[in-house]
Image 1 (cartoon, helix red, strand yellow):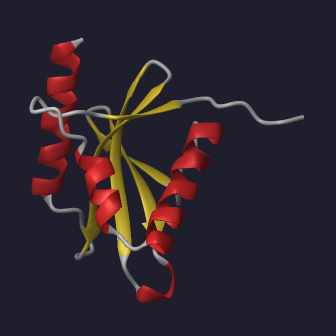
Image 2 (tube, rainbow, N blue to C red; image 1 turned 120 degrees about the vertical axis):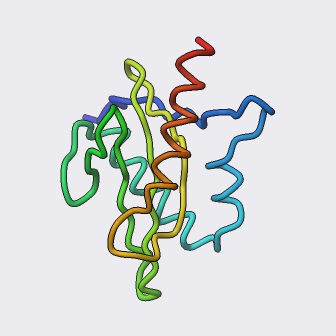
Length: 118
């Protein structure tokens, strides 16, 4: 029996019409895009999932945590939930131990704008 999607992935659009997470992914090497896509798919089909794949950031925000192989690069995709929608809000390569508050603020702002637009 095949698994069914628990969440539908949505690339959140900015007020200007861009899709920042999709644009960010397009800039990455194809092997890294593939790794990130696989982890997002794990969340899509297996939600709710906890550590080490996802972690709550508070205020309705979650992160997908992706180690990008032998490069020692670490990607983070911040998402929020709207019913059964996984709203991809922001993606970045993590450079420090803690997620910079500026990165969380970007996602929080996009989440707020999304909720105001529906």
